[in-house]
Image (tube, rainbow, N blue to C red; front, side, top):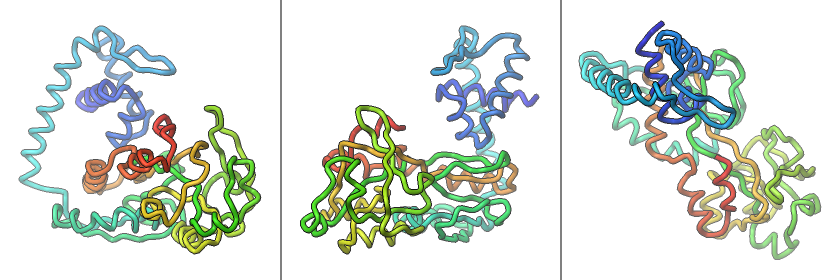
Length: 316
């Protein structure tokens, strides 16, 4: 048993109130966190947490020793930071794979800042919509919307990806717009072929999600193509706010069915648990997390302007 790792897992769970969040922060699986907590509890012969299906809270002995544990972990991290000046792992090439929606709409604006801050890290970035396995494809880190497949892969959620139904003002003037999700099938629709729902969309109605079948006139693996399809009056489109936000702010696209929010996804960083580049991988992830909140600022602004339902905040 690595007592320091077990103690760090204990501190992270206590801070976040979640085994899953602690796992994401440390870049390990939930089962690893559970094992480390169990090992520490066995070592001290006492429970550290009271667990239920809805919450995780410190036990009496957990509350007693948490302040000392966090001080020990903080001291160790400070010492490790000082030692790292002697030999840094923040150099060399990092192969990154990401979807165009994230690469072109967000990450591209941060590359210069990242390379200035970490001058010895080289970035090899491949932009593609196809979902891949980072191990077999030889990538250090993949940014994607969907959970990874494979026990040897770790994921860390970066931010919430909300979607919105929208169309151009001219399309609405010429053809009208649906006032209820059940009417959506009557209109020309552009839909992303990579969504797991395929030809169905769920909408929240009376605080419950209901599923509706849709017939896409244009189905594509490119979110940006669908964005242009909507801008050029081709039809109604379902787009991530990450891609559509500027067009919505400029009123080039008009939000529809705002009172019926759609389930969201998360932008995730997916990487091999045994990667030799974990230090650089975590460096990139931490860099992004520092610059964007779980509910992105553009979604906060879209909610403020009435373009997006405030109910999406409950999806986090």
